[in-house]
Image (tube, rainbow, N blue to C red; front, side):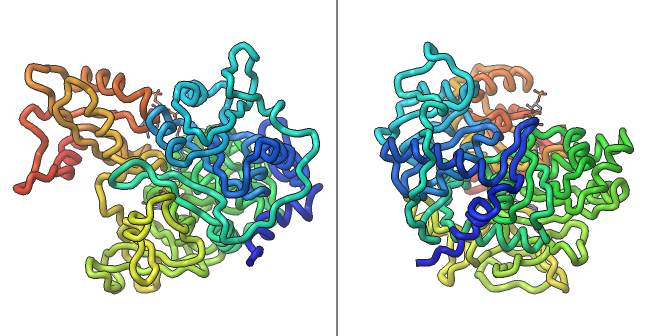
Length: 519
Ligand code: MLC
Ligand code: AMP
């Protein structure tokens, strides 16, 4: 039984207990304090009968409590299932039904709390733990305040944990069907993040300015798990604000990681205020990922701050597998080369590796790749080649020296907006519920700020006449309680004669993208 990954994850919690770890606004905690709070929460789970391998769904805004809950789960081998705080009824309902958690942890003032309250919860759910202010009168029967849930005595006797045990599920969208739970073991989680952060020369001397949301690989795994593994300090920002981030970097932050939308906004504020550019220039490392960085932003950043942003590529299923190194050349537009320990190949339709300059599908093999999709053996098998490479669905090319350039995705039905992954099909399914709609086609159209923004082609039912603006209002009304706000269409095109289709009847989404991009 191997424990190496587990030991690495807990090293600073066990051995550097006095060292400063996480802070948010005027609150801060050492590794020891985080661990004690995590163990008091874990003792509460134990008292409730929650066991190693059980799932706990966590719907929390960025906070120290979120980190403590995470540590409580990892210490006891309970599987942490983070949920995007922007999710609404359809998304939250699916994850809770699919993960069959023992517990749901939710913020007191979040919309998610009332959504959870209205859902028919699976029998597995023993309690809903509420974090934040809530009066007794407003609490439902199965809700308990976290202050009452945690035990006074931190859990001292911890279960033995195996590196191969599942530690984390990340729900992610695919081209078809509802979102799938990506199962990461302690080993895939820790090896992926350890190698990447080591590649970036991340040490205990660093201070990370963390303004990413803490429920996806980028913010949670690189940000929070990276901090646990490397033992640095992390300043959590509850939400991203470009000026505040720049000031935090100027005040001693050494690392900032962002999605491209954040870097675009940072350029905007730096253009207007030279002191903010000066502040950002003090960073040791600035990285970008989760979506393609605009070349002009890369260049303008360098002019303003002297920094060539370090780009890297990853995915919920694989963690971070391609990255520029800290000490070597960074090429504009390239995500770098395989992270040490990872194999990357770029293949044609037949699975044969293509030569430099040629575009092909990206496949990944290595210790950070997921165990599989939760309870979906068929989908898991389809995702891997016979020799164990994961098919990412992204396309890319390599240059003569092995630098990789991501060219996009194979499927138009997977959209990235603001760094969030979105399934076109999921939105279509919801919009089709509108009685006035005969058909819909959802696409992502290029957008300078968001990378892509959601647009929708609508075929009205006979007799329904509306302008694009009126359709926007109608479609928002249908979808706003079901889906996260960033999935709502921003543009609508009306296609009275039906969606454009090819001779085989397949919707030609590229034509819709062209039409709607021109508006
Ligand atoms: C919000 N708005 C959008 C939008 N999102 N408009 C178009 N497209 C979108 N995607 C609108 C809102 O309706 C609102 O409009 C206004 O913009 C401000 O909204 P907001 O929600 O307050 O925006 P903000 O909080 O500033 O969010 C921007 C952001 C956020 C960049 C901070 O998108 C974000 O946190 N992205 C990070 C996603 C992430 O972590 N991805 C990593 C996945 S892991 P109005 O009209 O009301 O003002 C992964 C693997 C890897 O991908 O490799 O990392
Ligand atoms: P997610 O499933 O949310 O983890 O998103 C993973 C997807 O984000 C990948 O499959 C890519 O399409 C995209 N992605 C991540 N990093 C980059 C990057 N640096 N450049 C372009 N696309 C990226």
